[in-house]
Length: 375
Image 1 (cartoon, rainbow, N blue to C red):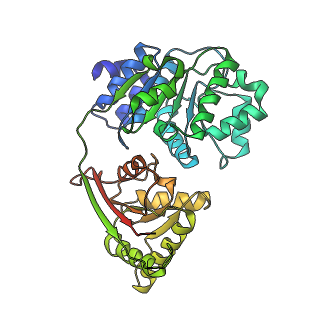
Image 2 (tube, rainbow, N blue to C red):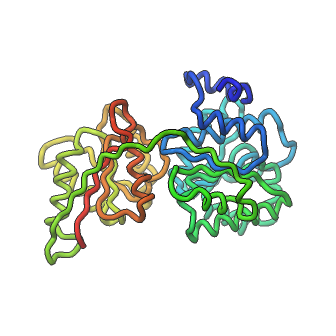
Image 3 (cartoon, one colour):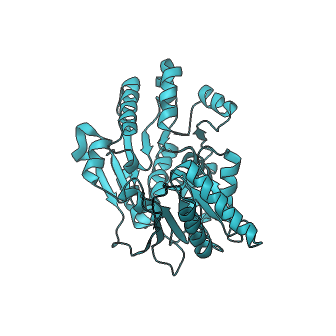
């Protein structure tokens, strides 16, 4: 572990000491050695909160500081699937980069134009962006791409498993190819992924023409224990939004989740609003403080920030009724339980969601409750 620590730049080492870390995680130590000792493309795979972000960025930031490229443009590129994840990761990286005076630039629809303008005038540091915003840069600033990314030494693709075998994934792979063509050289690709699915497929996606050369660093450890409750609700001839079934599910959630921090994945935004409203009404009926809040992409940034802050506050029990907005690696603190209403899009999605819970000492690694009703 110490040999990996010694490879890091002094400002990064100082940040680690300030965080009070006694040692690096195994996956972080292995990633640091691989990134610092080779130019290989890399996939870092670990469960939610497994330290993947630091595993990639601690050595990458160290390389930027110790081995300046001398060119113009952003030093590192981070591509994330959600605006909320980009905002969260930007705050995490700012802590590491503050000591090194390395700019961290989040780029999406909620970021002010003044921040974007300054970044376009003087591109440097770490750019965090969605695939769609990167596509927009190509369209609007096509002639400036070489200047904006001329110094970029690595692109980090977060939640890599979410783009495999999808139209969005095809778009992203095209963007990476266009980026390399624009600057006339390959850029190192590093994927961060949950330990799900076929990793050979992930390697082939990350570098299609050299999949065998992609390195894989996967977190050690046995299969996590899963505590699961499955409930069914009969709705007879009524439709999926049957008031009786909806009220019964809301009552079960209210009884078992009140007083702790939880996530309830309700599917579509309309269903999120319906269940959040039912749970709010139950709080009012029982003359109890409000603990249940909706969270989806159509709500204001201020409201979403409010819910995420409450989830992190141990003094305020909070349950977020959400779409997939809280499925990925946004920092929301410790969650006691995860509920899934209806079937998720895939088994991988369910596993990803359940992985958000059970992190407190004494809890099972996964502690979830899946609620379902027939169509």
